[in-house]
Image (tube, rainbow over all chains, first blue to last red):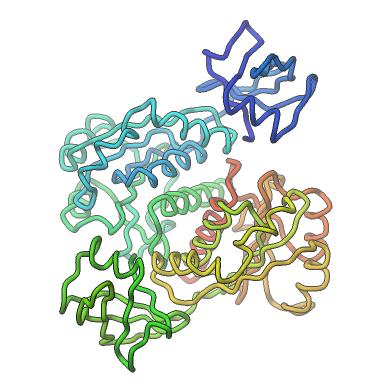
Length: 250
Length: 250
């Protein structure tokens, strides 16, 4: 827990917060902080800051915020489209997305996605939140990725994407694909304000899917010589994008 | 399971192998292959190939190899130095290392590594192997990373590294570090034959450790603006190295 993520529900007054769940346990047993000591905090979808531990009251810890700093969002913003994975993998995709600063996560149907995955409790926002918060706490970020579920592939690509992103906007659409030799630096050669990054299911996209995405402006790139797991592919692609953006800046 | 990893213990004769564990279950229940169908195979530390399913015998599947192809090792070779993480994380570090083609994995002591981690059953090679094989099977690779454990940080840096890698060889030594602004493309500006990549513990290296590593020729680089988990940092660094190597090639 690199950042204690606080919500409005934890707030006692303008400066003080009371936390009573695993965060209190972590503060007491792992970080072993005592009264007067400082911890880093972040307000969900708000600023980051530093607090002092004011008191331990039963199972609660009272934190008093001392300073707040706004967190700048990364540029380019990255929205991820991910074929809905099995629940255990979805937990790691949620955590990774939050940890690495993804803005929106579109979980979509694909040919190689089992229908049962859409019945998992994890498609519910309140079930996703703990994994998102764990990711923010790890990554020292505060903005929660906005997660949406889309049960029809073609509808998502042909109707939802244009509705959400505009027919011909400046977003760069990228598609991690084993069957291409172009690497990310060849397809990401401008400095976009927004990147839409598509990560396929275990077993990959089927040809119909990659063709429809290419027609819709997605550019395929070769991520790695190894066949990666879904959450590893997501991490690898986000890390490569971050490196390229750093390089283009200087 | 993208590749059925076979060992000499599975061999029936020059071409035929019998598999009877989770691999047989996966072939029957997940891939649902029948007699005559083809599956991709890999011989542990050997070639990759294609086999046909010859028969199901009780709980065993008999595979007959049809073709074998040698797998080229990646260039540059990458050896990873990783502060020994907690067992649950170590499983993912082992899997990721195998999946992404790491040659050697040095698991070392560091100030922020708990002593109890060295008592975990997972420090034993036979306990590590299933996670390594799972990684190879996912990544479609066959070479098992060579894993070694080093219980003294200073001894490892000052004595073991020179003994294993030579005092002044061509290996590039890289250190993922939050407290530096140089990015990987600034420190990795040649085409090395071998990279030594160091990944710190949860909570990071302590100053003594980074200083000793810098004195021993490690160059620090800034991996990501987010604070990453150990296995995520490993994936991110390997992915960035792979992109840079692809770029330098053309």
